[in-house]
Length: 121
Image (cartoon, rainbow, N blue to C red; front, side, top):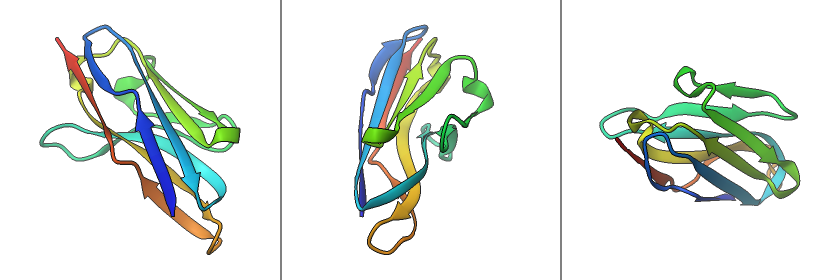
């Protein structure tokens, strides 16, 4: 099992900033990618940003230029710096981990519990 602990959500005014953190722990052999997804009320969960091995990153078009994803490989932690937040960024943000699980040496895909981000206009 791999556990993901998220932090950093909250309420912020439009134009403000928040920084999300997600620490992965447990049965980790190697990490392939970590990322953030979000789900707005009444909508499907969607990719926000993804970071692979090294420095490869991928961003959803609506957040490009405003959000930055980074990773501390030694601590299996991923961060999402969110600037110039907009009301449409409101939602539950979920951390995702993909990698190889130690016990089975098989690929695993795990999710955090989610953290609420609310942007008031």
